[in-house]
Every structure is written in structure tokens, then in C-alpha cells.
Length: 174
Image (tube, rainbow, N blue to C red; front, side, top):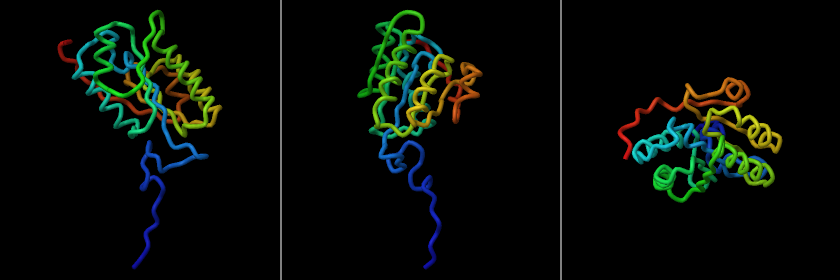
């Protein structure tokens, strides 16, 4: 019987708990829902679920990862976001860049704990350069998942890797 050389990536794809780094096993997902959806007010649960499904596939999400979703505090929209991905942390904050600032708070917290081996920023907003720098300084590898047309050049250039969501057509809002 011959032995085959197996690389760690074959055993444990991106986002799985087997690829340990300094004892860290989980991934952190910082998702700017409104940026990924392209609509900060949609209550179309089907569109939101489809977008989350595409994100999870591209980001290498596995159950047990820490997910922080942030969106505008529009009641129907925030409710639809919560329904579309139950069991995750949902944040909302009003004002200019409110959802982004809520996710930056989560990134600051995550940089101070030793529980994440990688982070995925689900947004194309330039403001997330701060989170990228803070997390990488803490030894956490950072990747980006974004819509191609909403990715800031500075974030694209600085990110370790970038994956693009497909263009998803939104149906009529519920």
C-alpha cells in the first residue's frame, strides 16, 4: 500500500476547526448586511437568505464560527435579517456608518481575545481597513467577501484575499 501526501487544506478547508493556529479554532465573521445586500432597507427574506448562503459558501463558514451581522435599524429590515440567519449576533445602530461602527466595536473586542484564527469581513466599505489592521496586528488573518461593485480599492489592495459575491437579483420586497 502506498501513502499519499495529504496537505492540511485537503483535510480541513478554510473555515474549519481543524486548521489550528496557536490554539485558535474559530473564525470571526463581520458582516455589513446592508453593503452585501446593496439595499439597507429590504425586507425580502428570500433575497437576504440567498445572499447569506452565498456568503457562507465563499467565506468558508462552519457552525461554531462567531457571526456578527450589522444593519440599519429599520424595523422590518432588521427583523428580516434576524429571521434569515437565526442564532447569530445581530447589531444595529443608526446614523452615518452606524452598522459599520457596530462591527468595528466587535472587531476591537475580537482583537483582544485569543479565540479566532481568522476573520472574514463581509463588506466592501473602506472603513473596515481599521478592523483589518487591528485584527492582523492581533495575529488574526483577515479575508474579505464583497460585492464587486461595492469594494473600495484600498480594501481590495490591502486584504489578504478577496472573494466576490455573485450578482444576485432582488425580488419584490416583502
